[in-house]
Image (cartoon, rainbow, N blue to C red):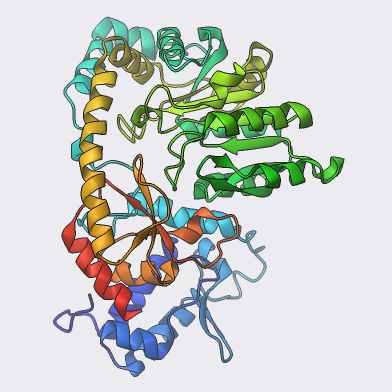
Length: 475
């Protein structure tokens, strides 16, 4: 909050607050700042103070004034802003950041720039104390003995990834009925890297790609940055909207989708899981219209083994399975993997080699030990039990605060209807030290919405919901 006891003026504090949010993408290019009168009311200052703060932002080149419309974040803010000078006029302006990419980066940057030490309902990971363990340090110590460390450090690892880990992953996948020999698995630097390898292997700029909506903002942004044409597919409780997919597939050869990206199990942000009937129809559509399916199973550790997966039904013929361990193990252990058909895995490996040559064998070997010893399985079981309790408490608090649930609560995330514009709500809650995930972030073209995604593990704080209710009522 702004404070009159600070050595900095109220004007300077307010200008610095907006400047930090703009530079960290918590206010994206094109976003409208609150009106002078509204900002003065929100911050408890005079309109004169707000006008002076906005003037400072104008001088820094971070915002622009639009006649009779208000103040907006400049598109050039991503490049650092600043007024044009004689020394900069000849420098070509950088390409504008795509809308989806700019919006996605706001939430991503929030992972690294927490607004306060309060629990953050908009975060996409478990609290750090949930992930603490003794087996991870033990695993690292095992693979960093003098002899092992020398072996791992003085030569490149296997191009496809550590052989021991790929054997462990093959066994693990068999447990959920996904048939993948070690030779069909390629390790990656996180699941996002695996998705990127698939895109760069199978697609070219301009290709149409079907992506579930709502969906993970980073996937929209990543595909847009690669020049793909995004075809949003509404996600329903039982699976993707098959009628919409059919229309895309029959729109003509020039518009036929080349790929469909899906989170079958514990979909982000709704928590939905695919039903067997819907899965069979999706696979029939893929066979009939000749497109591949990328199945992102990031939340597999939180789901029952019998959950329906496209890769299990298809046997990795048209499907490519993607998994990772950041959510359940440690966000900074960037280990992911993909599994594909023998005919395709060689091409995917070539793309990995061009980008990273190999992946870090040390952590891969440590992870293999965690899997083989059953440590990861037991850890995941403990997390699931704890999450079940947190989910129940959070749902009660959300309902008591006047929210409704837009989908049946499941997994890590809840899809909540607040009754107000969550873009505006997000900016106001930042003033209170809370980072939210507004629903517009999970759509390809960011329409206004009253929905937001909450993390059940970090939203079970009664104080947050009291602040939320007060701020929402003010809106």
